[in-house]
Length: 44
Image (cartoon, rainbow, N blue to C red; front, side, top):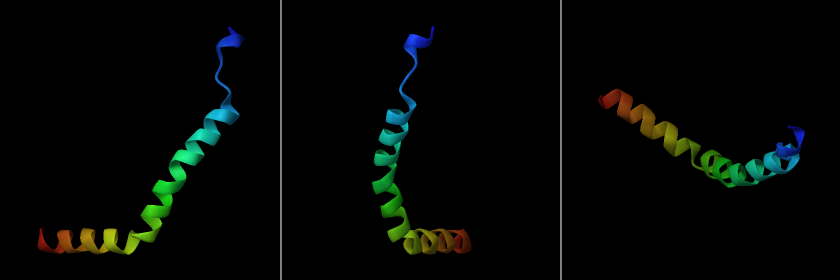
């Protein structure tokens, strides 16, 4: 049963590498996201 387990360090490394660009984009454009959400909430 144990021979079919995924290598968790490799899995978490891949997830971290895939998530890093998304987080960088989100935090760099965060002010525009918040401004759009607030504008939509006020108008709606």
